[in-house]
Image (cartoon, rainbow, N blue to C red):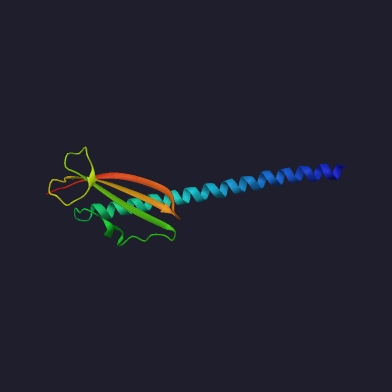
Length: 121
């Protein structure tokens, strides 16, 4: 009987230990994903702001190394009054852009950020 009780106690301790390790592993993966996503967004914003004003910034990823499984989408909306945003058409009246970056890993959204850019003619 004592052997069964000891076995039950060791089993309970083992289960708690394995759950703690699993939680730690999941936490580290989430933090790693967020750090990679944040670095990607920083690099994209830097590339966008170093490039000429444009209706789209599809070439922003030119010198950025994107890790396997990650994808970055760039969505640009324009405004002439700073209130109403619409798809950019290339008009000289479009003086403000709202740039949204989304980072996905294996199709799952990880991080989204938005910034604004003004035309400096």
